[in-house]
Amino acid sequence: MFKLQNKQKVLSLTSPSVMGIVNVTPDSFSDGGHFSHFKNACQQADKLISEGANIIDIGGESTRPGANEVSLHEELARVIPIIEYISHKHKKVWVSIDTSKPDVMKQAIAAGADMINDVRALQAPGALEVAAHLQVPVCLMHMQGEPKNMQLSPNYHDVIQEVTHFFEARIQACLSAGIKRENIILDPGFGFGKSLGHNFELLGRLSEFHVLGLPLLIGLSRKSMFGHLLGRDVSNRLSASLAGNLLAAQAGAHILRVHDVLEMQDVLTVFNESQQFKLKT
Image (cartoon, rainbow, N blue to C red; front, side):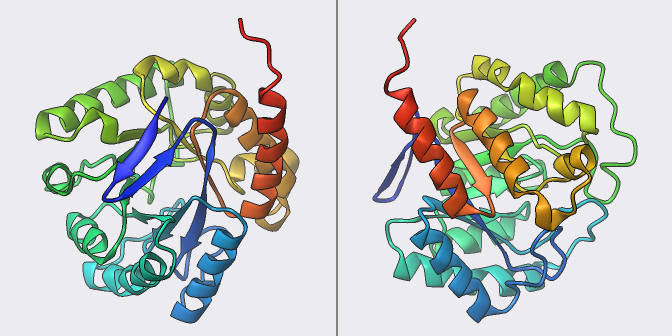
């Protein structure tokens, strides 16, 4: 059984936990600009926590396809105030910092964040060393390319095999840097350098990543894979997102990163109730 542990907090991952998204950016693909003002971000965090979020993921730099990088100063100005707000008001809730910048990692953890969620899997210069020094849980995500170009022509011989090999290399790099194995979480990176077929193959074969023996974080909420499949714009992908996340939970995902926490918790309540009657094989 997996669990997250940091400071005085422990989060059991025996059943799927819900990570609520608060993007304090003007240009994120789904909610860009909605919560870029401090007051709105605080209200959204409060709302997601009241709906049952176990973790709040704070992002200050969009990683949507084609996104441009933001400066260190701008990212810090966006994320530090909301991290301080949540960590002081909601002491039992986990706060995650969604960043690839080592200096943001350091200052976010100092401000009260509990874990690091890095789409570049600690590959930025100095990121491994900083994460090892901080000794907090870290999520390593797979991405082919960079946000600017990742969706131009993603190509794999076997997407599961190649993502697994990437994880194996990054896990070893983390262990060699001094990061504890129990502090590592894996995210296959839906929509990050993946075609429609790659994304659905990842979802259909998700359980194969359990061979790595680490918890899985899944980010499917409102993704373009559902838009392309169903012809739905980003505001009409809730049911598809819930279906995808339920499939991920059935495949053994441990953390579900979502925009719609209340609806996701309803789905998981039904899922968890049914699981207690599942025959042991």
